[in-house]
Image (cartoon, rainbow over all chains, first blue to last red; front, side, top):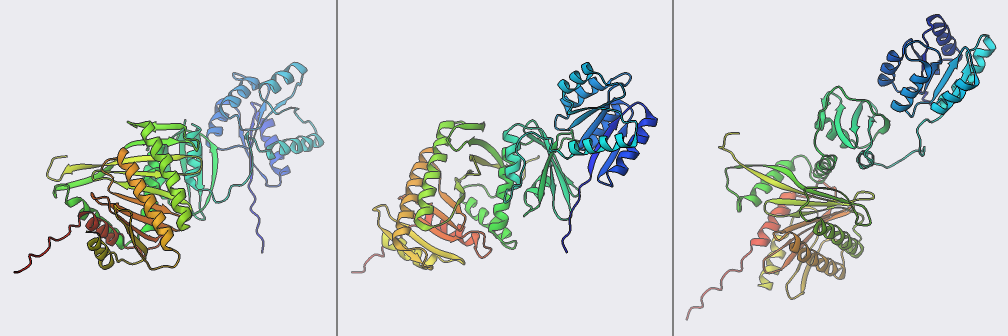
Length: 354
Length: 124
């Protein structure tokens, strides 16, 4: 049997007249036949708080309120939540108010209803507005896109948002502030473990929500190094079955033992990173000592990969790894970018005090 | 030395999921072994040539580059180069658990440090 999934629209009504607010909310909820989840606030402060807590599809503001009036609140909401559709409701409509409200970002300027018919008309109008996709830009469906592509898009655009990740059973969130991943939570994990768990998911859905500050900041690494580390982890997971993990470690030890003292521990630190666009223009770099040299490496690897792929029909290039005695460099070509990352083995004497 | 390395590859370049392997010597001659018909000799030779070029270019940028791994959608090429510029390439499938990375690392490490044994003195 075909099942349909209905998402309830979240609507917020703000009015200092509590008796009208209560009645109006009840009527609107009834008129929506369960399609609306109605919230109410009697003050501007409460309204802002609720807007930070919920992602509303529509906000309806009373024009005349004490302390912060409708127009001021409208201006605040427009600045802080520009994507939310906004309507002004007033008991005393006038042309000057109407012009000011519409110029400040209101989508509708409506008179408060006084009859059941008026309520129905208001509901129909607001419901149409709530059904609009508020965000600017294109609307559509993206398939076969990796979560890392979504993060890269948000971070490269230096956006602030919350990427909600949803699988059949679990939901997680990734907080991006001005292009930096600052927090992630998934199941009981937070920080980079949560982020890596989400990036290792085979599939699911995502939704980009307006940014709201997380309860804590748990991630400080650059997004580039996080994505590279996640990609390496994913590659290693798919490349080698679990029982061979120990064998890999043993192999690394075998390779290292001829060059390094036995009594050492290793960890990998990102040494430098370069990201270019497909035209070879540098988009971002971290501690890159020879940007032009690395750019040439990216160009060269891409051209050689094309030749190799063509002669042996190997398919699309995923990555190239260069191994040096103490460092390792990885080149990748995700959509619309070329990435060079070099990591360094940090050697620490096992007997040294840490 | 060429024959010695060719013999070494025949005997030692063996591991699960290996589809093809080959050597490119400094004099540009090649020696290939294929276990899969999808890797004709001519294509392998072109590939080894590409990889030697890659080593040459990358070593200008990263002088110690000793090993490369090219991971493509379908196959992965592991390559190592010796000080004498002989290059070894191993081709496996991508994304299969059959690939024994330890064995591959061992082959590449052994290849790089391989020394031709001194000829035995001839008794009079």
